[in-house]
Structure formats: structure tokens, C-alpha cells
Length: 126
Image 1: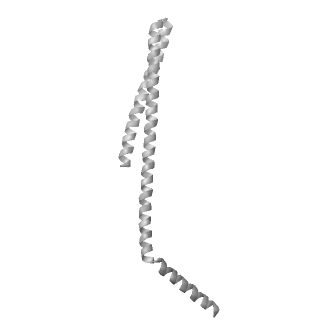
Image 2: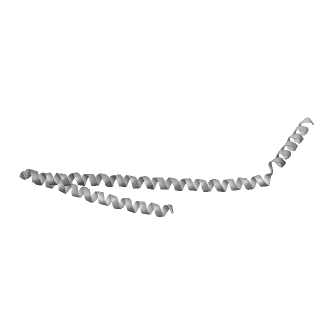
Image 3: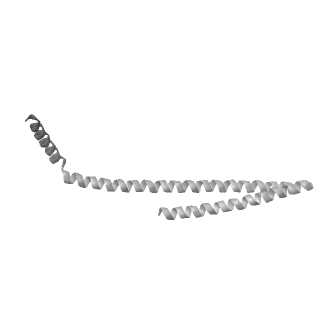
């Protein structure tokens, strides 16, 4: 389950990164075109291109936000999986402890320990 979700997140993140790279390349071309039209003095065309540049930059910012969100989801998923693993381990450990407690009967163990201490004390006296 974790491997599948990791793979899906990686594919989605790579897709977003590819789109960002494409848009950044387009941004460079647009900036060059704006400079070119500004040199010719065509103010109307320059304004239109500037608006396009603003929209393009907003789109890049949105995609970067989405990419960060995807990475956050991936990290959260991995943390949840780690917590699940810990819970499974604790479940196994508690079952083992329960089995040992059933075998060792605490009252009987306490009686054995008292007898041992009594015998040890008796040996020390002689």
C-alpha cells in the first residue's frame, strides 16, 4: 500500500515539475518577446504580453503550491505507515507479554521468590 501510494505521488509530483519547467521556459521566451516589443515602441502589444506574463507567473506559483502540497501528503502518508508499523509491533509485543504472564502466574512467582529469600537467609545463618 505504501509503495503504491509513494509511486503515485512521485508520478504526480514529476508531472507537476515537468509542467513548471515548461512554463518557466515559456516565461523566458515571453520576457524576451516583451523586451523586443518594448524596443519597437509598441506599447499596446507590450501591455498584453505583460498581462500574459503575470498570468503565467501566477500559474507557476499555483503549480509550485500544488507540488509542495503533494510532497506534504506523501510525507504524511509515510508517517502514518510508520505509526501503523509501530502499532503492529506493539500488538505483537503485548501478545507475547500476555502469554508470558499466563505462564508465570505472579502469585506463584512471588511465593517462589519468598522461599528463595528464606532459604538464602537460612544458609547465611549457618
